[in-house]
Image (cartoon, rainbow, N blue to C red; front, side, top):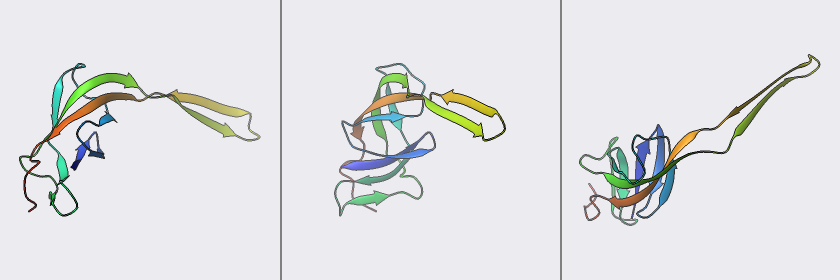
Length: 110
């Protein structure tokens, strides 16, 4: 069983028990959250429910594991023969969640 959810402007394929790093979410470690923007739920290859664009009444529940920051991305702008160089770095914040359950696990495809 898996589902496709949307959060932070990105889409993720999730399964129960999976750890996932998503864009920063409000809440503390240990809080439970629900993703209500569910695009697809599939029990197997033949039992698939697809939303248009989202499935009504379906949610994916998760628990916030931790908040953190990704590794630094280094940006270097170099202009040859101009004696000009600019360096910059960026570390994106993230929230790591553990997928607990996919609601509507036994629903038939539409």
